[in-house]
Image (cartoon, rainbow, N blue to C red):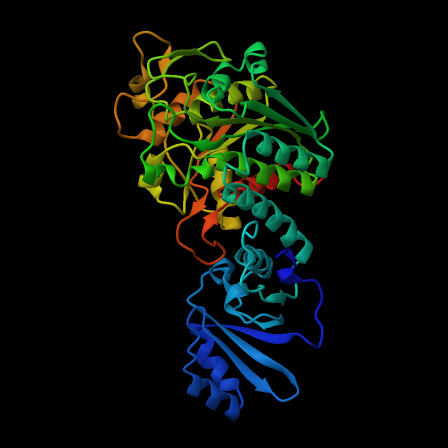
Length: 457
């Protein structure tokens, strides 16, 4: 899949013209009469996804790919699966299509999850002049990592398996990886991670990755790693439990961002903290009305055991802040309310730092990784009040659920500059560059922000 973007052109590659509707008439005016007749007879009108192969005798056929009204390269991200198998060389495309973006979009659309079933066909491979194939592959590899992890069911990616994936990532880049497992979580003061995961036969754990020069600016990175979420004693209905293998999507997205940072050699000191649990049901499961102590010393009243993600994140965020990072970022498949607000394609984010918000907005547009800022609205903070603990972990009102979840997490962050993403990490309906299944939402935007701030090493 990563070879779907080629390094070099050769004479065996089929020339590819990507033609938008706005340029189609001019293209036809410049075509030979025989070609015009063939195009007209075929009904090709440059609609998005239309394909036409034009014979050229003994030479490889000229291939036309319709771009429709494509505004950017990512609208063409299904090209690898629209074209017949084979090798192509891009020789014409709309002027506004960024070639480097097209290389990444092509690879994103070429992805398939093949662990259990081989794909039916190989993607079409494309050489794109003026695009850096290696750079596109590096980013795509990080995205593939997140997608593969999210797509893997919990039977094959339990808490031990997710820790092993972090260790594999660390080994690739010479990072140090450690884990606190099982009852050692209590000894080392991660009580909420332990409480959420203790009911499972797969022990809960807190996995940490350290990479980079200690003298460089410290970046904290946290990801929710719930390998499966039954809802606990407040068990989910079947239709809501069906996709809960993806509840470690926050950890997968954090790992994708870590991959990008380390592969680029950014001059930062990366500290990734992943709370990894299986929110299962047994006689030892934590209960509604329990009072949990947190690593930060804040007591937490439990209202609903299906709101477990914010509990494990709280201990992990506390740990990340203890090293005083210059910036703290977390990814979590946290609330259904975020999906009601913004749907599956756009990730809401939260921050109190206006400078970070402005930089992220610019980075998201540049990387075509859509995010949308929601408010940390202080007026809702009192909804988390508890009469018997410092805080209740869910709000007394069902409204603004993504906001109140973020407000709960903010109590464990303190004054550290912080970005929180409430992501879906799943594509329910295929669109260009995004096949159905697990996905990365936000890491490319954040990486673009970090590149702008810290530059290359």
